[in-house]
Image (cartoon, rainbow, N blue to C red; front, side):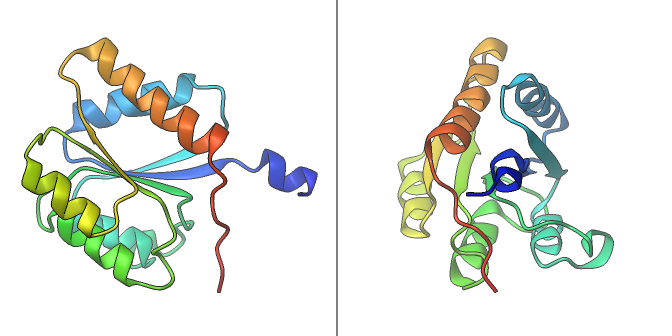
Length: 150
């Protein structure tokens, strides 16, 4: 691995319709040790526009990690996940589900759609921050992420 690859910031796409949760996640990631670029979109349509570099996102980078809420306006997070995992150019991007849903059917459905992990958002502020930091610690410090292939 070259030195430039080692210091390259990690591009994270956060798909979250709750602006408060998005701001908390951004704050937690900003405080973390790892260098990252956080891109936030607020609905499922905007998420797929970002991933396919359409409209206002024509210069969007390919994310190294996607943090995806399930309950989104316009296009549901389950639909976004399915599109990602069916696309040979996107399916290797790890997708972390971060949602309020504790429903067993949501957990099973997202794993059937090949989500990489499922995390239920804690309601307490401090615990939410801890969860986001844990996501980053695991996915950025421990896991080897795939590089984009053409």
